[in-house]
Length: 99
Image (tube, rainbow, N blue to C red; front, side, top):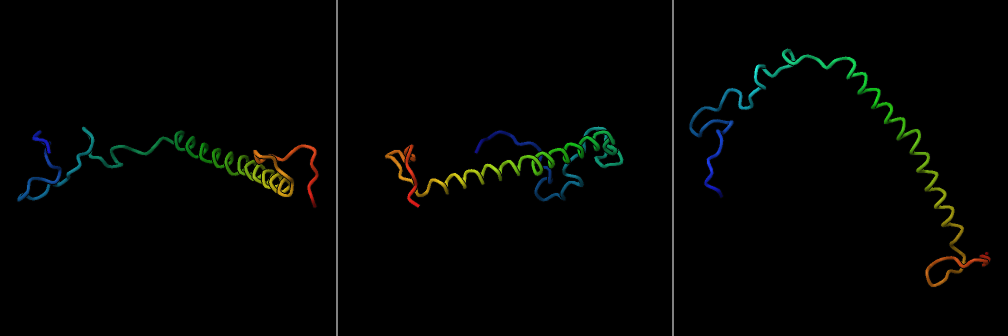
């Protein structure tokens, strides 16, 4: 432990009642929504537009591409299962699978 002085405890000193509001609001305000106000409509509209755009890109565009790549890999793996392989685990060219 260090011997550095600590700041005031937000919950008060032991033996005394706790502070009424241990976490102070920002200077000049009471810290509630009546003081701060609502978010402007333009920022709310931008937020929802970006959320829907992100959902569209991920779920509509990227997910089918990912599934297609997985399917192509699965089919390629299935095609190579019965073929003879060289010492590196690669299929030798010009060989015919024994089906």
